[in-house]
Amino acid sequence: MIIEAAMLHVKSGLESDFEAAFKKASKIICSMDGYLSHELHKCIKVKGKYLLLVRWETLESHTVGFRSSAEYQEWKKLLHHFYDPFPTVEHFEEIEM
Image 1: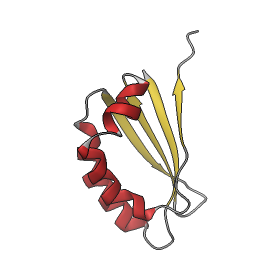
Image 2 (image 1 turned 60 degrees about the horizontal axis):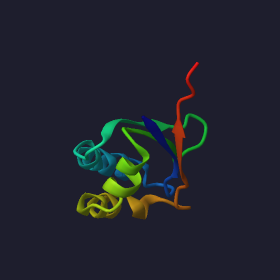
Image 3 (image 1 turned 180 degrees about the vertical axis):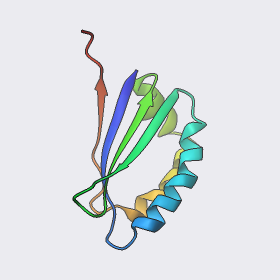
Image 4 (image 1 turned 60 degrees about the vertical axis):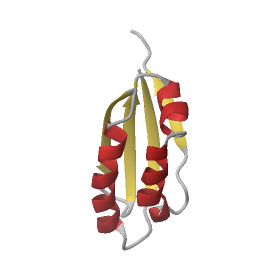
């Protein structure tokens, strides 16, 4: 399992619109092969800042399966215009202890 982490900076004044659009977009990502779960967190101290965490079975589930899909084009249409700057996405794997 890998975790995709993205710090999202939503344009000022569009936070409510973004959250509504994200609810719609959540249905898209939930339907993808290799998707496990996701969480969206709103920053307490910085208005318009969000943390998105998505759990995928494999890195390729996200980078190839999701990003090359028609569903991703709809995801982009719903969400990408809210961001400034565009988010950096990183991937993490758990360290076995």
